[in-house]
Length: 152
Image (cartoon, rainbow, N blue to C red; front, side, top):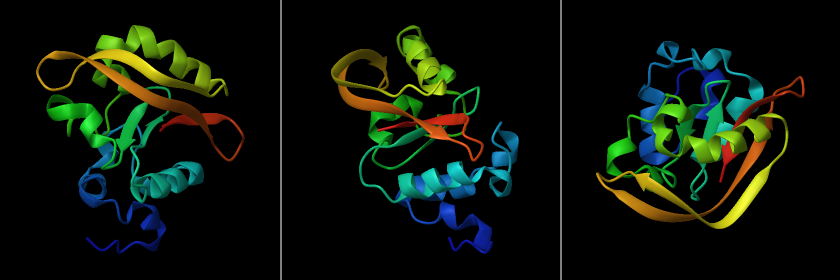
């Protein structure tokens, strides 16, 4: 798909997830039309889509999700593609008691990272022990406030 609106440069690229993000009716989500997204979110979406490593953005108070092709396997067969554009709290409800306080801390400006962190996830129709190396970093809006989280 060719982006006809030059203001939507940030939605170019990205393989399967780029196509899904471009096709999504964002006006039906808390993010609204991409034309109104803050500049920092636009830039991070462009970086995320063009990155071969798994990246995921949780934006706003409800942690609305965007993710790239590299992150898609983490969601498994049961969470993708439904996870695109909904709240992290919904997608990861089974582990929100573990990661929720981490997200809250990042929204206050404190990045966190872990190696070999075990989470029990049902992402392929059964609960499995999954081990991750990851970081949660704040994404700041133009006014300096944290608007979302970059998960790598």
